Amino acid sequence: MHLFSAMFLLVMLAAMSSEAIYPSPEEGWQIYSSAQDADGKCICTVVAPAQNMCNRDPRSRQLRQLMEKVQNITQSMELLDLRTNRDLQYVRNTESLMKAVDVKLKTASDNPRSLNPRSLQELKDKVTQLLPLLPVLEQYKTDARQISRVREEVRNLSLVLMAIQEEMGAYDYEELRHRVLLLETRLHSCMQKLGCGKLTGVSNPITIRASGSRFGSWMTDTMIPSSDNRVWSMDGYFKGRRVLEYRTLNDFMKGQNFVQHLLPHPWAGTGHVVYNGSLYYNKYQSNIIIKYHFRSRSVLVQRSLSGAGYNNTFPYSWGGSSDIDLMADENGLWAVYTTIPNAGNIVISRLEPQSLEVLQTWDTGFPKRSAGESFMICSTLYVTNSHLAGAKIYFAYYTNSSSYEYTDIPFHNQYSHISMMDYNPRERVLYTWNNGHQVLYNVTLFQVIKTAGD
Ligand SMILES: *[C@@H]1O[C@H](CO)[C@@H](O)[C@H](O)[C@H]1NC(C)=O
Ligand SMILES: *[C@@H]1O[C@H](CO)[C@@H](O)[C@H](O)[C@H]1NC(C)=O
Ligand SMILES: *[C@@H]1O[C@H](CO)[C@@H](O)[C@H](O)[C@H]1NC(C)=O
Ligand SMILES: *[C@@H]1O[C@H](CO)[C@@H](O)[C@H](O)[C@H]1NC(C)=O
Ligand SMILES: *[C@@H]1O[C@H](CO)[C@@H](O)[C@H](O)[C@H]1NC(C)=O
Ligand SMILES: *[C@@H]1O[C@H](CO)[C@@H](O)[C@H](O)[C@H]1NC(C)=O
Image (cartoon, rainbow, N blue to C red):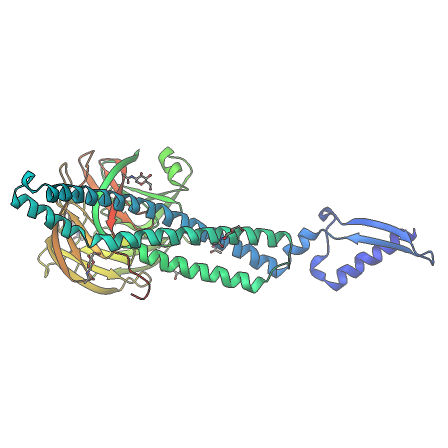
């Protein structure tokens, strides 16, 4: 009798001092101990469930967010690390090539009669050409080391945060917050440094799936950073409205776990792109670009791309109303198209992603109807010379210097009809739709890494 009323009192007191923690029965309040004091009054110790109290602490909520952020950064770092390793492989290959040339040169120098003067000079020239690579190689190595250090730090921080969640208040919270911010900054500059370069190779096609019709488009989100793994697929080029959204690449491969978006306006061509959770596409029989937001399932903005040809007037070589090709690279959103004043030559415009306003435009001088496809890497447009077997990357336009050059970068066109080719800067791969097959290619970029202070 005494015991019960005392317990009731204590519970009431707890509820008054902090209304936020009034427990429900299932939260497991317990009598920890009970005893009688010298006056015969009952003393109870009631233990509140610690975990539930913490859940209501705003500090713990912030900590959970921080943990999530650290987790996100860790993911990005891992991706970055993967890319760096791939580039290092390229550098190593160049390195061994250089060594081989060097050895040959030494042998020749030691034994001049084994070599005629002309080939000796050729060798010397080759080595001279390779020499500027040396400091670049050193930079690669330094950067890779730096990345693994940052990654370790992020891992350490994750551990600390995990510990602090178990033992609230045992650590300087502000200090932790500061460290996370610092990491974010470092990660950002790291990605900026390692992000860009000149395309030197397109290799290792992997057929992910064979689905849909001959022509179509598929993609993942192109914004950096993003941990969005969804895959979108848009079958056909003519008047389509159905976009399939898969949870992951694995689901796309198996054709499972997808939802459908029915666009309010039909599309033309295959030049669609997903950037920051929105689909940008060309509205059927118009030069209007539509920004459709997946989460709210609504059109956020639409705007006419002034003067742009449409309705199969200036398509790529394969036709299919591929007049307007939208794409994103490390530096944002782009539209590739042409106009009558530009005489059918490819024009590149940089677009503002919120308003779709044209920020700047370049005339490449390359006839659009002679191009198989095109894609943008690091503000450079790469153009293929055909959509059929034997196609290669034939032309590059550098928006940074408004100049172009002819290139000769082969790639394996396994199924002989490419109706879509787009670069994903986050994953550093090319997405292609090849005769009803969805194919990924690796790209190799040759990077000149900037040092701090550049
Ligand atoms: C972490 O990534 C997820 C998935 O993209 C996102 O929903 C969440 O807001 C991110 N969290 C933080 C704290 O950045
Ligand atoms: C991470 O933690 C380990 C073990 O406590 C420590 O040796 C290492 O120096 C830490 N690394 C960084 C980058 O802080
Ligand atoms: C433009 O970009 C290309 C490729 O990324 C690079 O090789 C070239 O040096 C850049 N030119 C200028 C003027 O920055
Ligand atoms: C991405 O979208 C969000 C809203 O969904 C917006 O706040 C943010 O500014 C966008 N970022 C970029 C780089 O467009
Ligand atoms: C588009 O092209 C088709 C076939 O050539 C034609 O019938 C139609 O009138 C054109 N529509 C517009 C809006 O130009
Ligand atoms: C292509 O990229 C994947 C994933 O990064 C890697 O596993 C594979 O070895 C790469 N292939 C080539 C030829 O670089």
